[in-house]
Image (cartoon, rainbow, N blue to C red):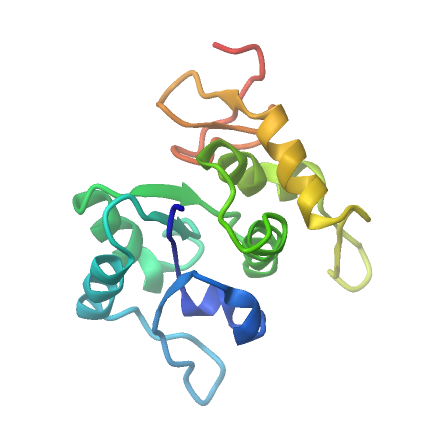
Length: 178
């Protein structure tokens, strides 16, 4: 089973009991509700605890500069990094679906890469209240679907959902297999 690593701001809305076997980089919320930068030592300790082969799920550095150390250190320590959507609620949705949709075990790397792009294609924000509207499908169905629709990226070893961003490098996946 592949361990997953994510930083705390992404999973703060997910009940602790629902986090299963995920490794969370601690990040205490400030009194004003903002998140301070992750501590590099805490990142290294969490990655070490997750072990070899752990997959790191992280929002792009531009969306959350305070978590940039997680993706940078994960790459240096040779962990696979999946780029979550920039929006915090969409990133949390991807992690929640990944955790709930595979019976407590992380989905395959390909399914994770495709799920990371799913909010671009499936999740819509309403104009009035900026509330996430997601398809009415069980997480297990979404995870299986993500594994089937994954296409390779033309730029890197990753891939994702056709028409969405690659879960590894962030460029658009064209869907024709090139």
